[in-house]
Image (cartoon, rainbow, N blue to C red; front, side, top):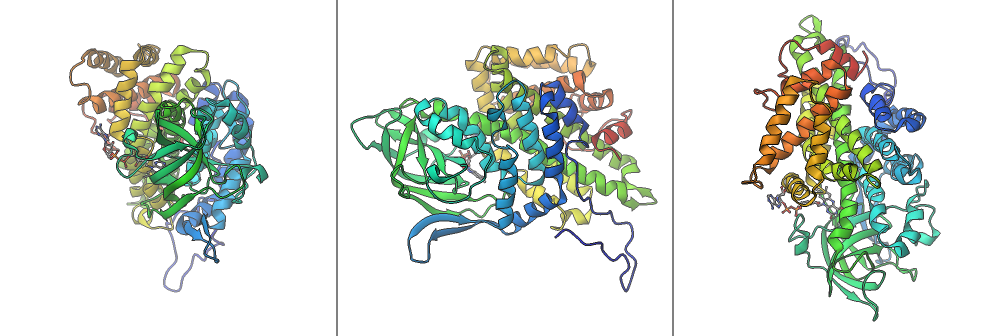
Length: 555
Ligand SMILES: Cc1cc2nc3c(=O)[nH]c(=O)nc-3n(C[C@H](O)[C@H](O)[C@H](O)COP(=O)(O)OP(=O)(O)OC[C@H]3O[C@@H](n4cnc5c(N)ncnc54)[C@H](O)[C@@H]3O)c2cc1C
């Protein structure tokens, strides 16, 4: 509930030294790194839209709805009152309100609706702001955004579905898509016997007629162990047809206007991400149409996975940013030992360290967004988008849980209590590191990009070269990375270390070129120094803590 003005005097004591409610946030105006990054990476023309949305997404009411939607999570409604199978999910009304706000403001489709240079940057910024309030709704947004490139591979199917995905109308009704004003899509690949290893899928697809291959109709039978947003209007999935593992579009309703035989088995009870429904799904003679080439299902769906992995980068950046905002608000108002917490040297060290991590995550995310914008016409950009997404997905998502925990600890006890947003952010933080390719799998994907795509490593090195001479520690780290990359032994064993080095040096190069010196110096002096353990709050002396903190959120 948005609190009415509270009574500050209770019968036994006067309430003092407690921070005021944060209230409405301006997620655009208060975030200098976001504003600068969007302009720098080519999204300048999206600024007005982002400025407007920063107020919408930052409204206390949106945070309140997110709290409600997570407290009272979705419930399965497998059958109606007459015992008919309906496979529905019932959500708190706040969830639907949040879905409507996201879709009406183009969160799932801005990049496709305004396809021109900078649109991926604007898209990333929109999502980053919305995700600060709520992560669960972002799952269907991520999948609806990401499915478009995969559907383009089969124009016969894409021409039908993509215009529906570009709608700005949220239509939650479970009815055939022809009758709906807007649709969302999901994907299910993971099966019980294998998630990372999708080739272990056992779901079978039999053709319904003589025609086979792309665009042909099939009947799918099998199970899927994780299916998030199961109320989506359609899903991409993988199943074995005679020609090998292939990709299929499976709608909730068949083209004949009948409910497709998708059977929702149960919803998962999850650590976090509670507003989002994640289910187990049985497919029994389920109608589907093949997308992309037969036997090339992984190749087809990987275009979607690239998008959802990219989403994980700005989602984790957003969680870090919001944790930092909350920590700064608390420590600016709370006094301990006669001084505001934000003025205590050791707390300054923690806050500044959180600020540079959040800024580095955002800088890398926005740089990748520009690479996504440019990839169609520029081989180097395509290579950077490819390897950079894997690097970012690994490193940014890996850093987020510890970051949110540290921001929580800045609050002391109240940070551990549900009325603050911090427990929800904390529970949300690990998921981005697990789904869409868990940590090790992302590092192996970095290796795959390095070994299979000639332009991948040069694309990373070109980014580092651009910053050469700007910071001695960064120069030394770039040289050390060159040496590491030159060694071809034990690559798989070393994949985490290599990925981490590439990600951190990339972040350092971006900050050295574009961030204020205080931020870049602190980042390089810590992350690229010999004593860094990864824990927050151990920045060396000589750093301009005040400047970093003031930049993060003006006091
Ligand atoms: C909340 C939530 C929602 C989800 N929603 C969906 C969804 O909508 N659709 C969908 O398809 N999936 C979904 N997933 C599933 C998710 O994508 C998988 O759980 C994930 O890809 C890992 O697969 P797995 O669980 O089978 O783990 P495994 O593949 O068994 O992996 C277990 C661990 O082993 C590591 N590992 C795997 N291979 C190697 C290797 N070669 N070398 C070293 N380490 C390795 C992994 O990194 C991981 O840490 C969801 C998961 C969660 C948690």
